[in-house]
Length: 332
Image (cartoon, rainbow, N blue to C red; front, side):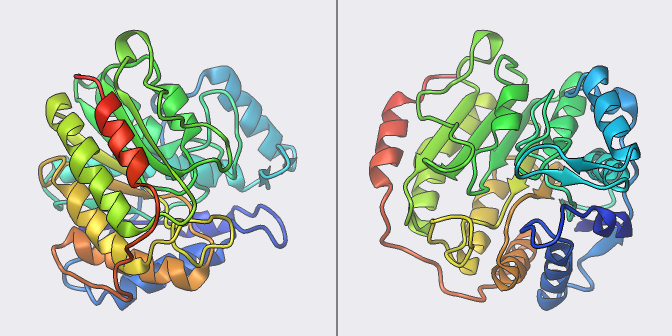
């Protein structure tokens, strides 16, 4: 397994007291150490995305404006999202990490890759930075793969809906976007009936779960709703927006997963694409211990080891959403 990260990610600073802080990356890397996978993990340095690659999702005018804003000293982009001069380089490197990982996997360097990146990306729309996100790393990777003739499924298990990723592929039938998220919660998108349009009708699949939802509900959603849709879509690549803020200890969310649940989620989604065509991206997760433990469980799962710092959770609400989604899911 490849673990892709870079020191430049520590240079992005959203401000004192901001939950998306450099210490998050320390927690993720500590989780990698906790997993005890030294012989199974190959650490690699990513490369920056090119302008052409970024333009698979983000138009040049947006890229130019964001680069200029950072170069001029940075500041607040909105109430939640701030940058410093180094943020542009960090974001471009984060966007390139997934593309670099796909190139390495194609070359036979591993069976899967985990991109420990920051800033996160899934709230960044093609033309707007928001929700701590500047460039949408998973979406850029998916856009590049799709331009190469691949069919891509993106599974987003971050507690917040990935509105930016949904927007990027709303009318694009080459990419299946699946989100399991707390609803209602920032950014307020991701309704059950939001399914895409045009060529992308039916290739957006949202599972808006209530606060308190537990791991057994997530597994039911993956088994009963997501897996049949993925099978019909027949992707050639799996990308995962792997946020760990669905953990019950997270300060920004109300879901009730444990770190052990991420072992199960990882194992389930690996079945959606062949070995050598699976790339995960760090998104949210703001309690440092929960992030550390959940990352350890996820990384172990990527190499077939069952590591559970905590027991899996069960008994929470949300089965009604799973049943409703199963009834509404269209043929793709």
